[in-house]
Length: 196
Image 1 (cartoon, one colour):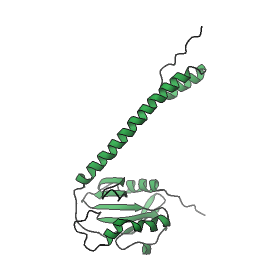
Image 2 (spheres, helix red, strand yellow; image 1 turned 90 degrees about the vertical axis):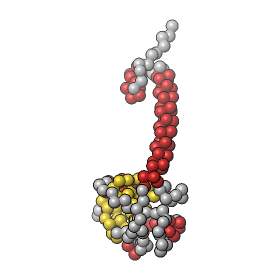
Image 3 (cartoon, rainbow, N blue to C red; image 1 turned 30 degrees about the vertical axis):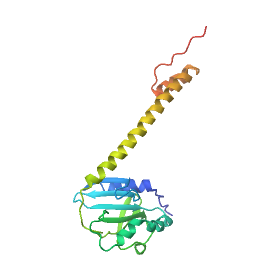
Image 4 (cartoon, rainbow, N blue to C red; image 1 turned 120 degrees about the horizontal axis):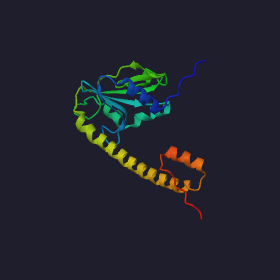
């Protein structure tokens, strides 16, 4: 009996990034394009300027809970002109987790089968307006970059402090262990104080 691969949101995001590589200008995951309370699990804009949002679900309970979100009210509206929303919306789920009958008419359905995607139902256009996403994405990408730089600065500082602490404590270890520490942490030769 074949064992199905257990997918996570991260593994499905990796598959989406790989699949939506050619012909797409922007590919972003876990980003708030359409507002502070509207996170897109995966978002991309094709070379023609149409945006697609992909909602990743790995359990039926999570799938059912998604319909409480405000965006689904917007998707059901008849006149979407002028609203900031994607052109297409897809659910991406492990193979067979939900059926096409469970999906609203405004959404598409993609199954993840192993490391591949199978489009079960193409998403219809919610609208055909094109937007210049550079103005929307630029500040969000910069904000993410700034956060990562701050986190990296903290890690570098902590790493520097850790190296200093290791260097101080290494003086009390036998020479072979000091050599291992020096090789693993790229430390300068540890000077052992001479005892008189």
